Image (tube, rainbow, N blue to C red; front, side, top):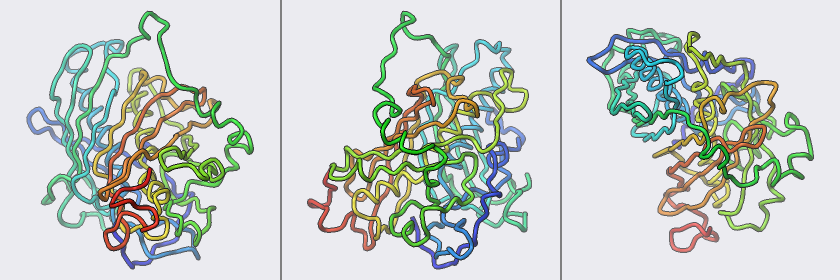
Length: 386
């Protein structure tokens, strides 16, 4: 997380974009077997959206990583759907997103588009893979607003890739023998007393920048302009008090800002797999910052940046569809390891009915000012006391 002394501009929650708006892609001409796309909207920049009167020096110069992660997934998914349609694969035999294994290799710039190149790697009837890379122009966009990027930006000189990923696609299958399906008790049961203490919408919004010192300055009522999903943060302080870091939990509640199609035939450009990407987008928010808070860097975080991010679906894409009438989804987050300047964030995605739909595993840089990982009182050598 780079620190810049450029003042941020006050945000407006009415500017929050839907999935279709924020992650819109325009198809570019193919290069051989490679499918190419370009983003049209600028990526979310955390910390640029505090309300007027609450502006702070910008803590982020890098675009929100969940943007390129989910949009790369969208590019790979569309490339695979095109491949299936060209092969005449019937709708019932088409594959769903199974995993997204991504690596962040260069800081993403919110003021420039991402250009995606997606190529099928392996193909079979039940399991296939697609690779995708994301680059950005090394010169400013042709758009003077640094948003609403034109397709001709794809012809500008490019930096080396900012992100690369391998996605797997799998044919949905029923539970073995029709009955075998195991998971731990959902958070709706394990944290029932906490969650029932107030209505979901009464919890404070997930902070634009979830660093303890920042939240204390700007307040916990900042909604910001985080796109696609409305997110609430459950107060887990009492539950976490006195526990070692690896036993602590954070709970985030979320739901779509605006409806997202899930057409069976994908004629709208979106099917249930788009909802999978919403969950992947949301799961990347503030994880490393929350880890920093728990390991003692809530007032001295110097840098936090994702290195790798893995997202695994445990059910078919249809089970990830977010419907307004179903209620709030839950992201359950914990922090099993920190050391050597890095930290691990794990989370489970739970449906409103308590189904464990997906798991996230993220490794990233978490470093304090001066390059130290933790405050002295919380370190043993260079490792977090977990």
